[in-house]
Length: 416
Image 1 (cartoon, rainbow, N blue to C red):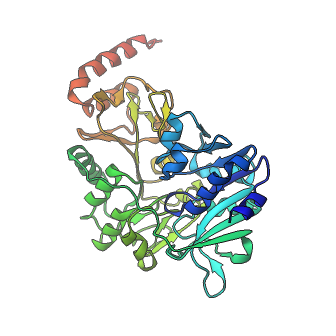
Image 2: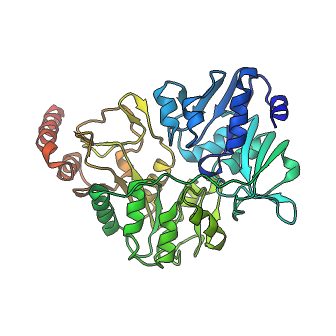
Image 3: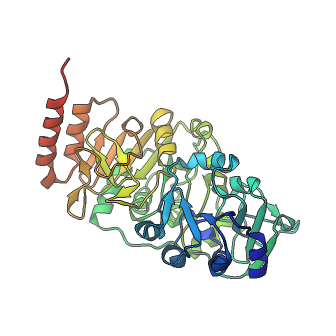
């Protein structure tokens, strides 16, 4: 593989590769091994759990991403990651316009079917959109990558080179929810109605929320990423998609990141893996009148603005699809929900003003903010009323200071 890789990556080339469970690790590591021979290579990296990429990226490779998800936060903390702030829905256009690296794509695919075509498996998302603008594709053909439906299949002739593997897909790191996460999940479950179509991410709070929905009925799912709790919801009979306005009876996603059990069941689940140009498109989301978006934040200010990208001076998150889904849910769907613990390292996450400087989702695109202390309903509320409601769901030990800050802010606003 290395000789072919060396010949295919010219000086100044831009490279991207699949993310999450579809990351083509052997190809990525071959690229890293080749780095001393490369000149001015730029790599676009999505969510990764590859420790070598995150901690040992050679200096010959410049790293770009839409955020600092997974282990990319280590690369960010080391000052090696350049973030392109954008909505996830914009990635197809950025690739089409040549604004992101797109000379060479490294992908992981399923073995070819009877017609000689390979599926993108669990990693369709932006990959399915980027390949149309990428002249050179190099594929890891993994015998354990399940073939999925909903997106383009690629003939073996489309690949400039391939490597054949038989290895388990990456599994998502998991931890059990604690009292805070369970309390948040309970409040969110009260906001979701039977028949709603939900969008939710991955992580301990999203997992707790999905598990808390097991008593609901006829839920639909339209989301950028699915994990094991989705499988449990299907098995509980809660997730049927029977009332979805589009793709009825079908779950729609762009990627999967979970356990081997989830990957083994994908062929039996009513799920389609679609590109970002469909999953996150405003024209698609506007048709989901029952859409409930559920997204996490790092901090929320007293007007209802959410920051989900930066903690301290380090990029640790992303805009991602949060604004795409929050805006659609707030404007044409059912409701937009932001969740976060009330404190982080002893400090309040409900703040008079966003501390870390990045407003990821505007206050006009958020209907409800949920902490372990309750749900602050913000739709139709004035700024003073928003502050009052948000203070009520802040940690009790921080409410007095927040109220003082709110009074100072109100006093500073001219009355005429």
